[in-house]
Length: 570
Image 1 (spheres, rainbow, N blue to C red):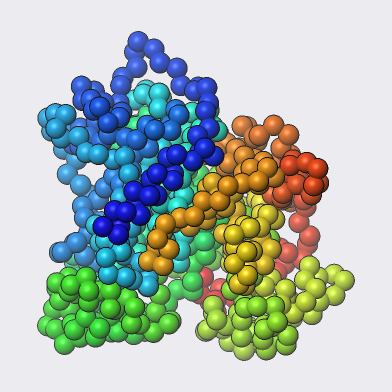
Image 2: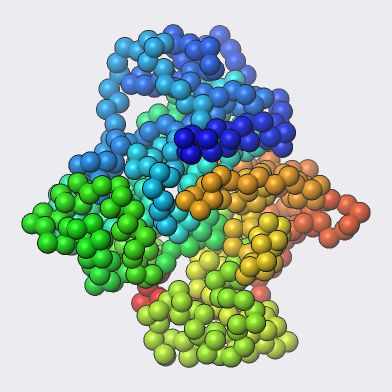
């Protein structure tokens, strides 16, 4: 009842919000040769998409936008498929009648979170959500944007990232998708025992995302999409996942996407095999499988209660995240990029202005050089003293030539540029394809109001603007997303940003369908980046977004972080 209640409330919030009910004149014109999405199937509940093996009815309560939610794209990863790579659904066409239509007017359940709570989340959660123009047909062949949510690879959900506005404000020129995938222990548990079992393995959360992209390649045309025009995007660990798909198998010539959006990419350092085994042993002990003759079979038989206990009773260093597996992730990511072993696709990438602020502690906690080192060691506990000494030289005390003015800002920059604030610039300048960089300067007012360690445009701030006043989906600790009504200045920047992002997904250029009055976004190859900023004029809501040029010291600091890749393990 708890899950049903909050999903019902969530749906009411999402589909009644006047902020989301943007009307548009569709660019998709029907003619006599176009084919309906449903074939011969109909439902009084809404429009139907017939995939041949299954049919789904969508939610058309928003003007000109239809939502299809909770659509499974792999077999449920439960029972004998727990800890198994994603298994493809039986998509063999069958004869379907109206009685076979599945109600897809709402979200699917959350995946089990970390921390975990009994009754919140499910193993059978690997689903996707699709927003289409309501008058789309199977002949439309629209570009597709696929969002991979963040949350450290171990919490959050797709439900807090509605893309109604992306479809509406693109004048019906775009289809948007949000993926859910196995999280934390159930998605990323790793050990020699799992690798030795032919039915199991590590990195299943990442493989779920890949399976979702492959499902879209096979099926998105039935929703009116073009499988050759898929852009993947994500923020934080979602952005980190996008990076791992770009480097998959050491670089694919034809990945299942044509472009990538990378927002504040965040993967933790890859665990050593020894540390992964320590975390695995903790799990087997918690569920009572440590002395089993078949540990994998025992883990698969464990109750959800036992899994929840293992999730919640673990060393703080065990987060269960992607690991180097010798295949999909063949090596440390920085090394793959340096060697050119990645898919060469167009990139839109950036970070927030104070991306490291929430990770280094409160300003009053950082006053000495050792405080700075300790703050960075929280993320990179394996850094050598030689590296931390060199870091303090690379990030010298504040002066007239540094962008930081305090010790806390010095720590924030060091932490931010180790990955969140440098990979976007680096990746965008070595692909040889069109690339665009940004810095997000507008704060999320809800984060600032929390009065925690959020300072300025902190990590995740852009999501408030891109997704209608929220920046996270429901989790074990948050029953439902909280949507905040924009003021006029926030609304203006949100419209500008959504237009840029969706324009890139449509045409590989954020300028093509930019909002009127937006500054021109120059390619990253010209040494600049867009600064996305709220109006600085109290009498006007027009954003003060602008192009800026990089200073020489920023690429130099980024290059230093790449030089210590073995130590950082990113």
